[in-house]
Length: 469
Image 1: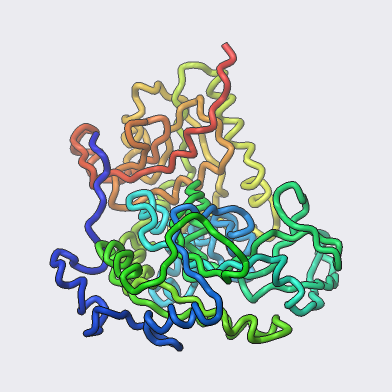
Image 2: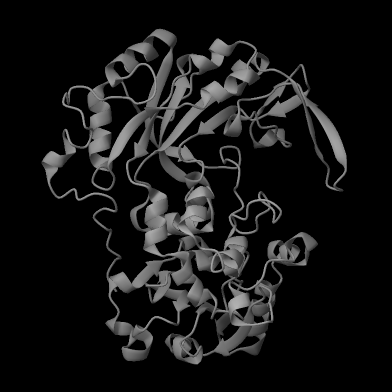
């Protein structure tokens, strides 16, 4: 099978090169570029401003995603960040809700959620990261004394009220100064409080949702535009952006996929209240690249929840076909999939008792839980699975040698109501089948074309049982 082709674009027809010039910006002077919502209002003046106050902008391909640069909402499956009494944004919550309530208004207003994450994950696997992350970065040890202390109220692991005074507070949102428990993981020791902090504080916007999806996919090194203080001496070995031409070159490349515009980051106005000297924050001006296209409209139209949901409603019990002729290997693989600590904790916790099969009220009076069922199958017959599954719902094939450290239900991020199956390029060890795809009834696997197939991330293949024979 040939490589999956990359779509030409999602939002605009970029077939004419002259469209890139003035119509892309709505701006006649292509020797400069406008910046929306703030001052300076053009790129030339912005670079002059950066020189005056001591800021620099760097374009790099080597921004590393780790736990300290991730924003909130990193749990895409279980709604731990947004439990059932609040927003249900994880996979299980959205699967339980959306067929019964799949209005565009709620989809649009819900922030990041499973449906946008699903679209984004599939898009990244095809095109990688098109728009670099927009990152602000500070060296913590140079700024930690310039933030206000604050008393926080919260709950401990026993759900008891507690108060915690933080001597040093970072900026609002993802710009918190992260405390790290293990100094050997990289940090510095702060004498006043006796605590070890992460060396850097980050603000990633726009892209706070995108970075979590990339982490979920195991894509941990990505392009980014990083704004820093020169005095912090932060460098990723990339290209310093100093002229309009530097930005035009980057944006022309992006515009093969997206129409874009530049806009000032407005978050600093919210962060002022945490700084002892407001100018420490207000002077830090970051310019972001935004897409003109509405990714929520795209993700909704690409695979509407109600269409995907009709397949999910026929999916449960979720059939997992394990490819082997050995009962021992079958049992070993089955037990590993069942004994997923995260999913088991989620399903046993009383807070999640209202999570059921997707759309179950429309299909049955019984509400099955998210527990897979297993079938042993000859690996040579794996493409018989849609027929064995009565051409209904999603199902999974996995080679018995795969060691499932992750929740197998997360493969549903890579399903699509209009696609036949999802797999790795040139590898059939794991396949997510859309058994309802009409082609399974009327044609054979070798007749499918690239448009019928989606990709899976490679990290599922990396964990395997050691051959004990």
